[in-house]
Image (cartoon, rainbow, N blue to C red; front, side, top):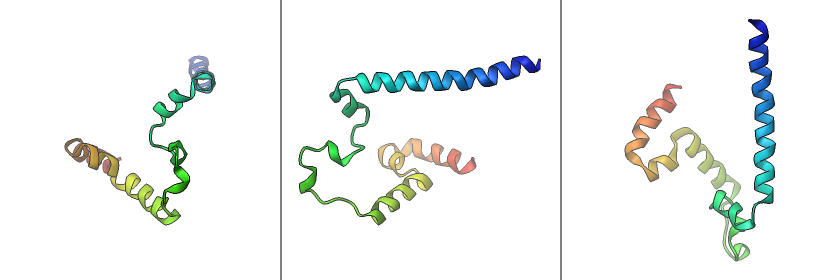
Length: 93
């Protein structure tokens, strides 16, 4: 019985590492436009004229991160009806 548990434990770790490497290789070999579709809006440097625009300060970025982690601000703005259930679940954890 203990052998099966160890097999499942170590097998899942090896499977996770293998799949992560495989996914990384697939993403690295993908065309550049696919990178932008996967990480849409996640980087300032995606914009063609990023150096001409003003950027958030470190304090503004930290405040945004804290609001998003503690209050799930992104869900609140996009789908308020779902946010009530999700926030209750989040606070309950």
